[in-house]
Length: 157
Ligand SMILES: CC(C)(COP(=O)(O)OP(=O)(O)OC[C@H]1O[C@@H](n2cnc3c(N)ncnc32)[C@H](O)[C@@H]1OP(=O)(O)O)[C@@H](O)C(=O)NCCC(=O)NCCS
Image 1 (cartoon, rainbow, N blue to C red):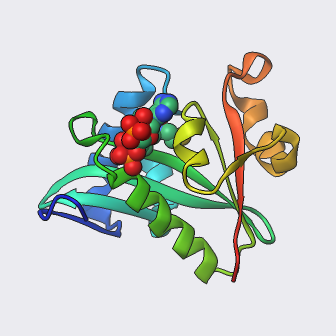
Image 2 (image 1 turned 180 degrees about the vertical axis):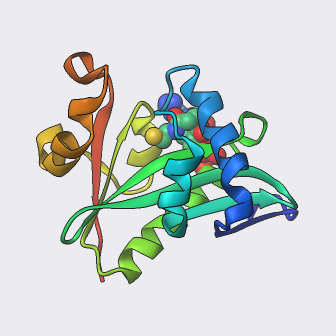
Image 3 (image 1 turned 60 degrees about the horizontal axis):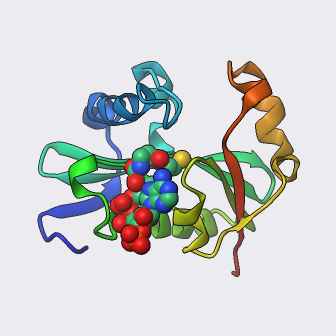
C-alpha cells in the first residue's frame, strides 16, 4: 500500500457507520447509490475496507449476480486520498476475492469507467449483466435515464 498507515482488510461490524458515511457522502453528489446501515450489515461479509486506524477511508463489496458473475459495488476512496493508487489496490483485492469464490467474470456499473478500463475491464452493453438490471436497476429512480456505464473483466483461474 502506498501510504504505510493504511490497511486493506475485510469489514467488521464496527466499520458499518464509517462505510455509510463514506458511501453516502458520494451518493449525496449522485456519484453512487446510497446505502443504509441495515443494507451494509446484510452484506458485511462481502465488504473490504481501507482503514487508517479507526477511520474508514475506502470500501467496496462483491455482490453475486449469477453463477460465475459477481458485481463490484459501493467502491469509494475518501476524496483526500484519491489518485494515489489506493482505489486500484482495493479493486485488485476485490478481484482476488472474486477469483477465490470461483467467479469467472467481475462487472461494475459506474460513472468512472476509465478507472476500471485501466484494470483490465472492458465496456459492455448493460444487458450483458442482466441480473443486475432485473434485480436492482428496475427499482432505481434513474432507470429510464441511466448514465452509468457497464464494464466487465474476465478472470483467469
Ligand atoms: C473511482 C475511485 C474509487 C478511484 O479511487 P482512487 O484511489 O482515486 O484510484 P487510483 O488512484 O487507483 O486511480 C485513479 C485513476 O482513476 C481515474 N479516475 C478516478 N475517478 C474517475 C472518474 N470519475 N472518471 C474518470 N477517471 C477517474 C483518475 O483520473 C486516476 O487516473 P490518473 O492516475 O491517470 O490520474 C475514486 O475516485 C472514488 O471513490 N470516486 C467516487 C466514487 C465513485 O465514483 N466510485 C466508482 C465506483 S462505482
